[in-house]
Structures are given as C-alpha cells and as structure tokens.
Image (cartoon, rainbow, N blue to C red; front, top):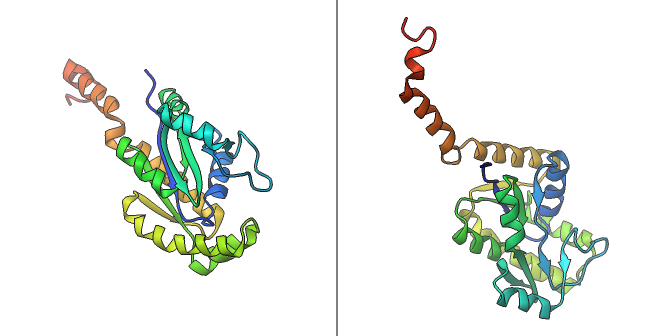
Length: 216
C-alpha cells in the first residue's frame, strides 16, 4: 500500500500572495496537486473555470453542501467557497500531496477533521504592502478594498492556530521556505511509522547479529 499523501493547507489575508506562491510551488514541484475549490463568486479577469475555481451558482453550492460532498465550506464577503471531499481523498489515497489554498474559516474546519494536515499561514512583509497589492489587482471597489484590509487585521489573530508562518516578501524565497516545510513534514517520525517498524522487525529477526562486522 502506498504511503498517504500530505494534506497542505495554505491561508492568509487577501492580497498576501497565496495564489502566486501556490502556482510557483506547483511549477517547481509538478507532483504536488492543487485542489480546485468551488465558489459562487464571479470570476476575476484572467481566471479560468476548472483551473482557478469551479464557478457555480448558489443553488449548485447548496446542493453540494446538503449532500455532504464538501470537506469544508465558508461564506466570505457574501460569496460561498468550498472544497470537494471526494477529490481530495482520492489524491491522498494515491500517495500524492495536495495543496488547499483556502480561507481561514475553511482551514480551521479542516483542522478539526484532519489534524494530521500541514497548516501554513502566509503574511505580507507589512500591512502597507498588503494594501498596495489589493489595490494593484484593480478588481474591487474602494469599499471592498477597505473591507478586505480591515479583515486582514482580524485574520492575523488566527496565526497561532497554524503550524507555520511564511512571510511573502520575495516570492522565490517564500517558495523555498514552503518546500523546506514540506520536506521536514515528510521526515517526521509519526509519518514514517511503517518504515522504522520494519527496521525494528528486521533487527528482532536476527538481521543485526548476522550482519558483517557487528559481532566484532
């Protein structure tokens, strides 16, 4: 049986650059899958259905929710977002790693169901830089920009619920940190139980005493 894949949950304030980091990480590590969430919000300029999100109606979203087909879901700024349960579980069972780029509400729900996941919080170098990034997108009104900026302050209070924090100042450096986190998590003892149990089994069966050089 193949080893179960790693569930990697990435969150952070709007404008922190989560999407960019996930894309760069995926480019450097094509074996990592990125979960595509469903959402009821309209696509932004350049976003593609099935790649960035599955853009669906609220009626379709309610059906998925009521049929328990979502691993988590949340309402953010008047729109609904959710993660398809079946898709994530299939990837993990194949032994492949998968990234969920989701909001804090959804991340905390997943943490309750999947405490073995790796939870990473992305922050900007400064709040001024965060505001600049949100404005640069030119996809929200001034009122929406202010709402997101104020929301970022509240979201920072949840940092301690995550395992890691990564400052997204220089994209390449931030991606290196994400890769280091993933590598470290793969080397954790509790994720390699079968490996060391097999070594102990070999030792108890006499492999140690018969190995060259062990007895002097």
